[in-house]
Image 1 (cartoon, rainbow, N blue to C red):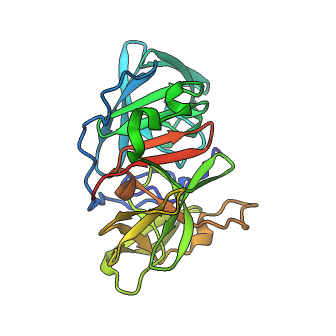
Image 2: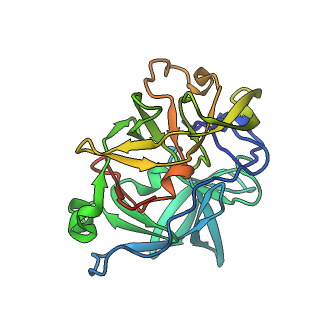
Image 3: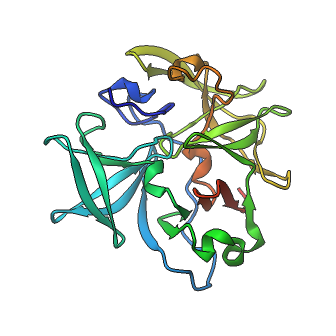
Length: 293
């Protein structure tokens, strides 16, 4: 069976549950997306620009063209693989996006009918990106922008303490106070999956679908104290009133042979959409442009 290395997929109703977990019905994030204002007036090296549509529960990358049709694909960095939802025979389909040609495998019955495909980590391999509000810019890995992003984005760019396991990227966080760990960077998750603090606000219970057609109750919380992402200098970037899920048996998310996974946490859109994001997939660097939340 076709599988992904995914955790929660919140707010998108999936007909197949092996993708991880999903909550039927929309879950609105407390955090708002960063206002669109690209933070530099400097001339950028050659790149492609992709329009980003923030649907609240998920992000769509707009403009993929094939055979005279234009599509918007789910952007999901929690997924290793990209694919196109096709009711036809198995195979591949060719697309054009921002002047770049690429090929996706055809899959059927994985995503809701409203989402025609998914762009995962493999789509961005050998490149770096800068996402700011309504626009995502993608540069080749040998671009000066990838090598020295601070030359274009100034010292406001803070490189996070990041590590990579397999194809996936994790960033260090602190929450609750005094507890530090690493969380999976997942643009395909509406909310975060975090440890519970002593004074967090209870927002309600949610039914979560797990792999193997299991259903479990998850608790939606809002952080009472600041949540921090930790950058390379040890300085903490602060986020307030972060919403997240807890009360999930995390071993349900592990794939076979993955029982030694250290990191069980997820950093989703509730956090990622609030800062302009730099992501160098070749060098394993992730950074945010420092702004006041």
